[in-house]
Amino acid sequence: MEVIYPRNFSPSRNKIILDYCKWKKVLHVWACDAPFTQWKLDWKYWPLLYKDIDNVCLEQIWIDLDKESIELLNSKSEFKKSKVIFFDMNKLEELDFKPDIIIFWEVIEHLMNLEIALTNLKKVMNENTILIISTPNAFYLTAFINWIFWESWWDYKRVWR
Image (cartoon, rainbow, N blue to C red):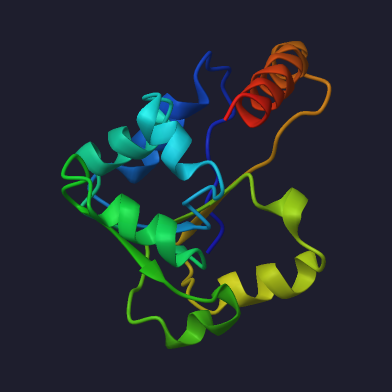
């Protein structure tokens, strides 16, 4: 069965994603963003999308391989419907969770073999599962400016610790 989704302009990709996640079971792959997890939590920079999804979804499971970040995120009370677990996406067929939505958020650019990753994701998908893929746009001006300031800030923190 082919499902056709409307292709309309939206100023916010987050709103579109939230609409898809409403009352759904969501699997979020590689969600901790280590080694920046603690920094993002301290500076209230943790992506609002994660919290917003937690507010609208039925259930959300995040999988990641960074045990320290997983413990840190699980200790946060603001995530009520989300659970972060240590899990290797290469063994997704062993995951006891059948998602309606899979969020593959800014992961692709870190992978050595995209075909294996997508094949593994397909193992937990059914014909109605929606896969949402996002990757940074290297030519997005705001991202470039943020990168310059991030690098400057990171060097400052490293030198003055």
